[in-house]
Image (cartoon, rainbow, N blue to C red; front, side, top):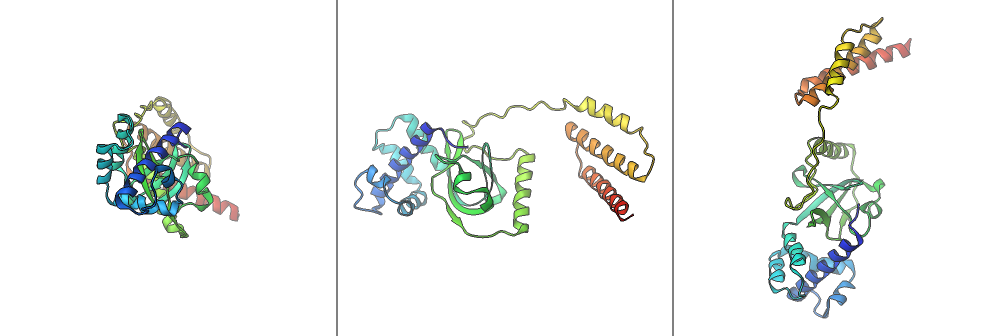
Length: 265
């Protein structure tokens, strides 16, 4: 997912105006006299000014107060909110339709929107997971990055990949994926209809409980089906206990063992 062309254009206009102001204050490149000149600088040179900005976020307040580019209030407010930025090292785990999954400190999981190009085009899926230094910014209720990513060429083993996937799965299951740094502008979550299948599941469970198999394999399969259905019912009722999953896993293992024995025969 990317910003609309209008929003992407607005972001870069505001970012370059702010960074040009910072460059003037810190004189990283004294020969730069205009914003257009600053915009044409290569990315590696912009990194110095960008880092100076996030080392001194009070410059955002100074820019908003002076408003040297005569920006309208709504655009100044976008810049002011950048004080809520997140600067750090993140793992980019995967690309989804609604945004790319960034995992940061404390196993916080973020959904980040691309700017003009899909992040999946910049960092293809076959390169993931990848570790990168990034600045995450609030922008109109979404999370974007500031246009510059410093990635590490590191290969991750199965242990780290497994941990990252587990972190993402837990955040997704518990609806803890952070999609906005601006609670007042975040898109409200639609309430999902719950328990719509609960009566049917209970009816099916009651019927299945009466079925007996003709042999050990059938009974093992039926037991797994009953336990799985019971787990679904518990989830719908909000009463899932760790023991429910363990019982289903044990029944699944027993069924697999029986199937292995049949193959040996």
